[in-house]
Each structure stands twice: as structure tokens, then as C-alpha cells.
Image (cartoon, rainbow, N blue to C red; front, side, top):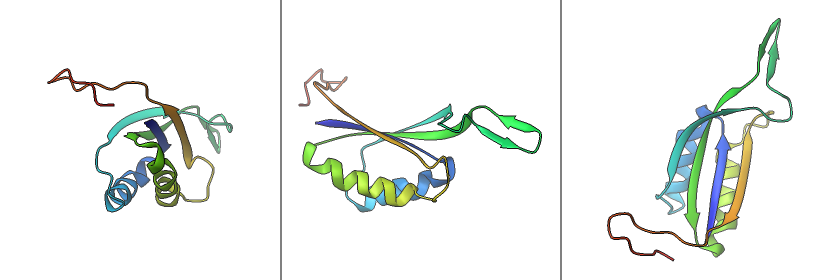
Length: 105
């Protein structure tokens, strides 16, 4: 199992969630986050925005579903501009259901 964390523009969140659902994946977590990338924020006239609002989507999927879901995330979150986001993938060793205390993996 893998955890996918995708940090994307807030205005692309609904389109991305809809694309994930159309791809057959509906279990996810959305979180409001702030941060900055390589550009260290945005400079507009005399105003500097150090950290920008983003949304993070977290998914846990079987290994064979990682690449198709990454493709879906990239296509749906893409604008072609700086700040489109990042996708991080990490292994999941264990997962438990709180209500039943049963191990999921």
C-alpha cells in the first residue's frame, strides 16, 4: 500500500476530486494547507505573498493503482503555471479502523 499526498491549487480541488471519483477512487481526505515552493512566494507590484493557500488530498491505495491515480491527479490539477503543486508517495506499513480496531492491510 502507498499513501499519495497531492498539494494543489485551491481552485482545482473540485475538478481533481471529481476526476478521482470518475477514476473509481472515492476514499480521500482533503486538508487546507499553506506553503511556498521554489519561488518563495509571489511578488506582485510592491506586495510579497510569502505563503500561499493550497489544498492537500491524501489517499491510500494498492501499489498497482499508484501510477493511474498520479496520472489522474496531474491531468486534473494542471494549469501550466508555477505553483500547480507536488505529489508525494510513501509506503504505508499499517492502517487500523478506529471503530473496530482491526488492521486494514
